[in-house]
Length: 65
Figure 1 (tube, rainbow, N blue to C red):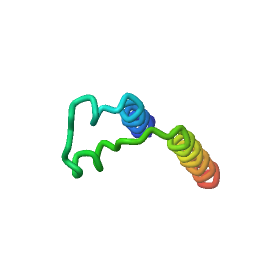
Figure 2 (figure 1 turned 90 degrees about the horizontal axis):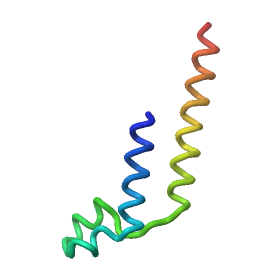
Figure 3 (figure 1 turned 60 degrees about the vertical axis):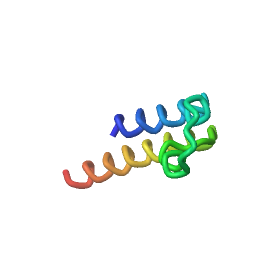
């Protein structure tokens, strides 16, 4: 689970530095995969999602005992 959050954070950092423009990527398909727009709200959403998953997993393990 932390790896997914780390991956998503790395993608956002690459978007911040405009990786697609830096390397002159013109393929719309590749741009759609790596993204072209940085948004801090994405990082906040990823963090909220990660904490929600951890909370739900903890609640489920407490209910199983």
